[in-house]
Image (cartoon, rainbow, N blue to C red; front, top):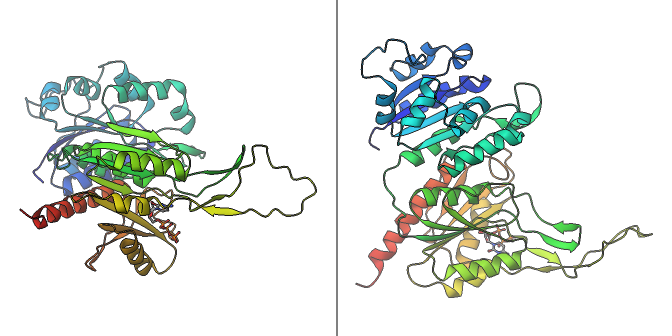
Length: 406
Ligand code: CTP
C-alpha cells in the first residue's frame, strides 16, 4: 500500500501509553505518523516516546515555534490522509462535538477534510454518561468513525465499557479508512450476524453465546470497501456500522425469511450468524410455572436450515459463504458443511478457544475451499479477519467471471 500520512492525536488518559503501540504499528505498515499531543497527554507519556517511534517532531503547543515553519495547524490538517485520535477522552469528544478549537489537536480536526477516526477510552460511568453518549452520537452523525472501547478491567479498578480498543483493532480500522480501493463498489452483500432466539414462553428463550461481532465486522468492512450492505442481525448489543442497512430479526424463521428476500439481488451472502438449530415445539403464551414439578421435559423441533434453503436459489455469479463453529474435528466437520451446503468457501473456527471466537474481539480461522485447499489465517482483530474474507470473496468472484462462458 502506498504510504499515507496519519495524524495521531493523543489525549490525556491512562490509555495514552497504548497509543505508542498504535504509532509503532502504523509506522511499521509504512505510513508517516505525525503525533499531536494535548497538554494533559504529556503528563502520561513523554513526547519523546512518540518522536522516537515515528521519527517525526511531536506537536503539543500550538503557539510554540514550530521546528519546521510549514508545520502549522492548517498544514497538518491538509497533509492528513486520516486523523486518528487514540485515546479520545470525554473532554476531547465534547470539544469536537461542539466545534471547540482551543489546542492544536481540536484545531486540526476542525480544519481537516480527511476522515477522522476516534477511539474513546475512559472510566465506564463517564463513558455511559448521557452527555458523552450524546457527543458520540453527534460525532457519528457528522461522519466521524469510531473504534468502540472494550469492556474490561479499567485503571480505576472497576469493570465495564471504556477500555481503549486493542491497538491491532485500532490499526485495522485505520487501514480500512486509508485503503484507496473501493474493490466492492457495485456489490450488494447480505451478511447475517448474531444469535437467534427461540421463545419458550413470554419470558424465556433458547439462544447461544454469539456476540455478533464477526458479522458486524464483515458488514462494516464491506461498506467501507464500497459495497451496499444489508446486515440481517439477531439480537446483539452492537451499533449499526456506518453506511450499513440493518434488518433486525429474532428467530431463525425470521432470519430465513429475511435472507431469502434479500438474497435474490445479492452479489454475495455471508452467513456469520449463529442460527439456533432447535426451537421449542410449542410456545406457551403464559409463563410456564414451576408448580409442583421436579423436572420439565422440553420437546424441541428443528429450525429451518437457511443455507440449505438458499442453495437451490443460487444463480451463476452469486457467492455464498458460510461459517463453521466447531468444538472438535474442525477441518473435517467444516469440509462436510462446505460440500453439503454447496458453499463457495467456508470460514471455520474452533469455539473451544477462549482467546478467539465467541464474544472475543479477535478470531483465528481457517478457510476451506471446494477444491480441497485449506488456508490458515493468523489470529487477528475481527476487522482484519473480515478484510481477509472479503479479499477471498473478490478472488472467488474473479475466478467465477474467468470461468464463465464468454
Ligand atoms: N446455518 C444456517 N441455518 C441454520 C444453522 C446454521 O444457515 N439453521 C449456517 C450458519 O450461519 C453457518 C453454517 O450454517 O454459516 C454452519 O453453521 P453451524 O452451526 O456450524 O452448523 P450446522 O449446520 O448448524 O450443523 P451442526 O449444528 O451439526 O454443527
